[in-house]
Image (tube, rainbow, N blue to C red):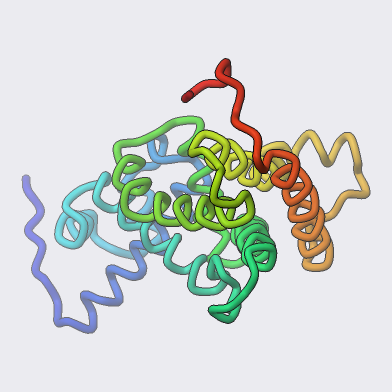
Length: 226
């Protein structure tokens, strides 16, 4: 027997949609896209299962909306430029990028959900990853590479720019992905606000030193992507 869904008024529709996004964000972050069920999400949201079809078409559409909304929230609170003025130096912009990235993945509020969702995407990619990369992640990547390009100078080749940018990102995500091991190796390591800012300073200094070393040098031909 099919369930007929009668759409409520606009205010109620908006509220239901938001409740579904919140509940789905929690469930997807906890168990991943593949293990999450629409029924569990709707139970948490206090919504009818048919409401998912009405607002998002299906589970895939709901997940894609959750990824987009979670990134929007995280960038709204921690923008990639962290509010720097237009004339900020490349060094300041690199520090802001690293600090923003760290805050987005280590904060404890709703804005941290995107980091947890993307961590799962790295292990079990879904169909939502391609549009997420194209529409939202690539612009952030382009921003970072423009910063690195400014630091390297006019003679930098695309491969060196790309490798340096990926090295910056790899430092940030290392602390997130390897946190379970780090907490066992170094129990005193914390990721509180003060520690996160200190880590942003370190990653910036380390990256600037590496970029300075790479300036004027071409990437070895044996490296991938050459």
